[in-house]
Amino acid sequence: METHLRSWTKSISWRVLGIIILIVISYGFTRDLKQTTWITLIFHSIRLVLYYFHERMWNKISWGKIGYVFSENNKTKKEKR
Image (tube, rainbow, N blue to C red):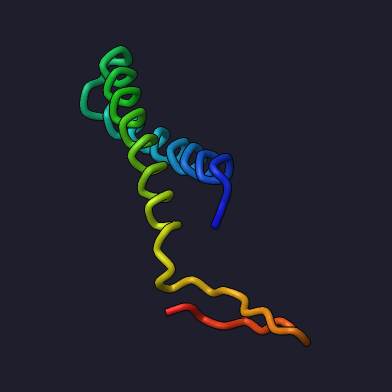
């Protein structure tokens, strides 16, 4: 499980990369900075929120996570199924 702050930080850093790519692509098509700005702001605002909730949903699913099983003497790594 990760904190909400970590989920938001990952979401924002991923979106920054996407913003740069979309700016280049949309400016290449529109050649208009105002249209490029609106396209980029709207698209990535929506994507930011959707990604956050997507990450939080996946955190609730144990499939594919590596967990730790604690015993009295030691802890061992065990894959959750």
